[in-house]
Length: 339
Ligand code: 13P
Image 1 (cartoon, rainbow, N blue to C red):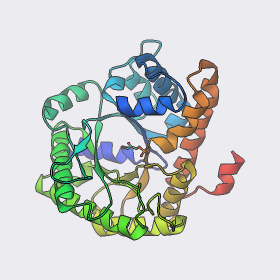
Image 2 (image 1 turned 45 degrees about the vertical axis):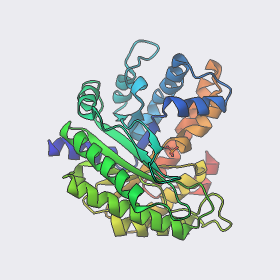
Image 3 (image 1 turned 90 degrees about the horizontal axis):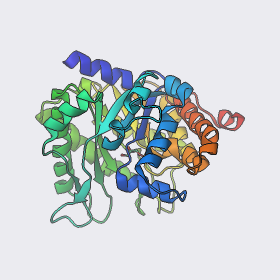
Image 4 (image 1 turned 90 degrees about the vertical axis):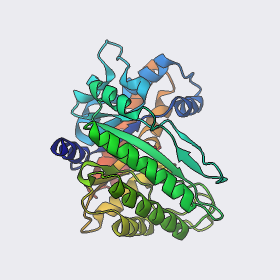
């Protein structure tokens, strides 16, 4: 069992490959579609996602796995092929988001705790049968006056670790995602402290819940200045602070770290990843698990119209290639412009 988990985790961070996060919940995908004036129907969601998964060249060369929402794992492409099969035929691994969302944490104003543990063992068994070989659970951690609190960090780490243990029991690799949110006026030092606390709490709890680290992937935020902070740290500082924070907190037994993009611009998300990979002697693979930073350009180019599919697919392919280069530290602005 452990051997299968380890092999899957290693495949998820194969050289030059990363993860496409296409697991927007019904509410989130509606927001994305609203931004391009497209109605969020089941058919439109299917068409949009099928268009991404059919970027065969990008999928084969840049994408190791795709995180899906429950609906998508059960959907069929226009020609009747299950979407999970469209993905696996490119060599990428289908994954599934299993948490049921972040809710207000009682007695802790401004803080969240992620739900979804009830019935999870049974859901994992079904997801395995549907072809999922990895999963995702996202915790939301806000920075503010006196927060994150110990209460919030521990409640979320406990849930993440309970989820991870159940995933491994089902032979599914857990992506553990404690996302420190970038919104707010905080500076990069506050983001560093919150991220360090969140990761230390998480790895302590993963140990307590007997999770095998070699069969996990971490999906963290980068250490960034808050979006409303007057001083914005540059690319090299973000890369240096992020790697410093991860080295303090993430055991070398973890095979790979795939960052979320979290609202960064497409190019910043790529530049930060490439700068981190250009630094020597990181004990783990560093790659991407981007949602917005991989999809934003394609979504806009598509605009819900069939005639825009080729343009949208080339926008997605371009971003996937840039991030693939970043995953080995070989991206630069000239390559961005040349394309
Ligand atoms: P973003 O890259 O848009 O932050 O999404 C990644 C993700 O899966 C968040 O849970």
